Length: 70
Image (tube, rainbow, N blue to C red):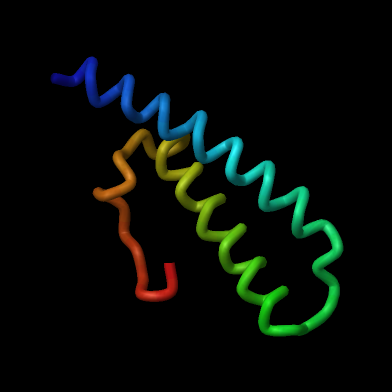
C-alpha cells in the first residue's frame, strides 16, 4: 500500500511541477493590481504550497493544512 501511495505522490509531483511552470510562464507580466493578476498570484502561491507539501513535507495533499482561499 505504501508503494502505491509513493507512486501516486511522485505522479502528483510531476503534474504539479508542470502546472506551476505553465502558471509562472503565463504570469510573468503580473505587475498590475487588477483582480485577475491578484487571483493568478494567489493561484501560483497555492500551487507552490502544494509542491512543498508533496516534496519537502512528504505528505499527501489531502493531509495538509489548508485555508478557505486555498
